[in-house]
Image (cartoon, rainbow, N blue to C red; front, side):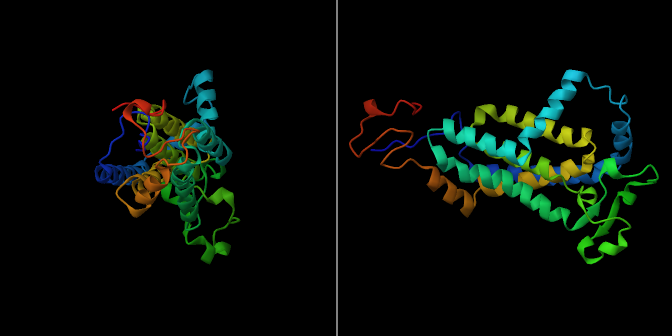
Length: 260
């Protein structure tokens, strides 16, 4: 018989529970994003003041480098490494791509519906956080914004953060032992977007809500997850270079299979 390959680590098989938890996390992040509007401008002013945050040089470099976990090329490299090292090979690629790039795509679509000036492009004349929002559905009233409808007014939500959270969620589902490390990378990526002056705190929290929402679809009890699970199952022909047939005995399990 063919022994299915299990994820590295103790995978949670309660997909319904996983989906519900991610939906709950999405709701919490959305509520936190709304609450963060109260501190967006004070935090933005602190970040614009070079010495206000007092981040040590090495930690600042770590935050800066963490953008790799959220940038398109960096995410593609992470997916390529996972495909190269995981015995399932290319079969895990669709799950990773949908989780990461799907989250980023949804965030980018949301950007087109809300015009919000980025922190680094906002002037000092802002009196309240509502002044950072210029228009809803700006593509209908571009000439009324008072500034060009370009990347400078596409702050909400953060596409990078959504991508990082989506990637971290899928990586955690595939490799549960590394879930805290993946979560840390996603948090650092969100911090980088704030530290660089490209996003407000509420932008990153709203993006995290999107990442968890997509994660619920990719890892929860959905038809998409069922299809991905079937795709990731080992075939009779080969998995990672190993061949299994109907007569494989327990003593002949492939060496990459964890006993249990």
